[in-house]
Amino acid sequence: MKLADWRRRIDEIDKKLVELLNERSRCALEIGRLKQAANIPLYQPERENEVLANAENNNCGPLTDAAIRRLFERIIDEARAAERDAMHPDGGRREDGNE
Image 1 (cartoon, rainbow, N blue to C red):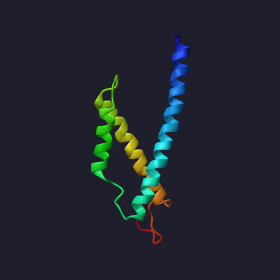
Image 2: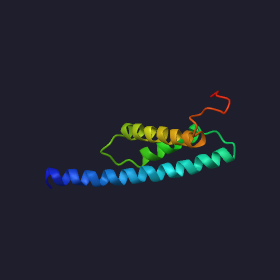
Image 3: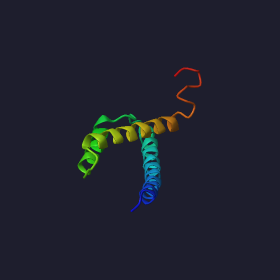
Image 4: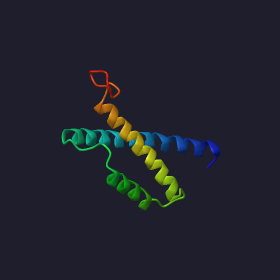
């Protein structure tokens, strides 16, 4: 394959990645709604560790486990931010103006 072919392939993969990341975010938002309804804390470190371990265990390279961990840490951070935004669409401010 030529350079343009590889770039086109990367563009296709990137499109799929965006679709999958948004699908994952929709799942995380539903989980956030369930947590809120059940009065469960948003941050659950044991689950986060499980997700990171699963990602590393599914890694066949060429990315290192450390690279996969960093990527998934960022994905989790963004999912948590989306959950917070969904739970507090006013930016986390209460009606009395306090956060």
